[in-house]
Length: 225
Image (cartoon, rainbow, N blue to C red; front, side, top):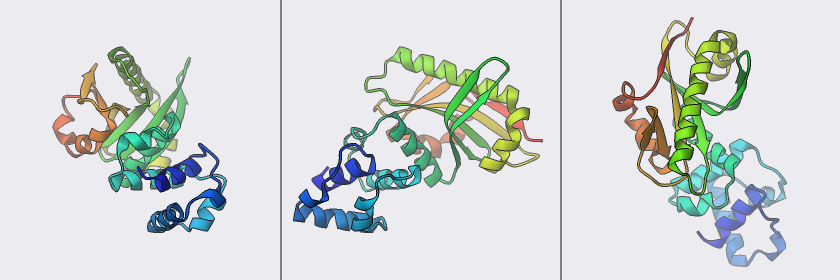
């Protein structure tokens, strides 16, 4: 990763204050070129003190698609930044996306990091940004995400109106609820309690082959009324 990209990420993610006056002529030229390719003005970009999640996701995904090393980008992120990348990727792939969705049953409050829908798949995603995720951590995460999926199914009559509106869910059709765990570390796709644990760099491939997995991984069919 060259210095100009690091400068852009530091400002975009508000990691370290960027003193524009101290940016070298070469890095300034590189920043201008890179920002222009994403339809951002250099001057306006560095005048902004905050960016929306949509802006952050757009730039982070653009860097990944351009081949910037995943690990070097993720070194700039915290758990929230990782969730933004996941939500943005599903959006880029044509899914309807809802982030940080909160719901409850009679006794407990729950939260889903990212919900992504593309008929007939409704993915309930837990984003795990652990530096060194252990098998026990991922096993526990899969178990809890499976539980959240079962609870969403149980309380769906109470939350259906909101989800139909926000995710454009179809009526009179059967959709399927799938819990997913997505981690940032590189590893083989794993399964715990029949829930996929997918590394970020294999997510696109997994989604392209989802029809091969749909009957062998945990899911709950739901007929929309």
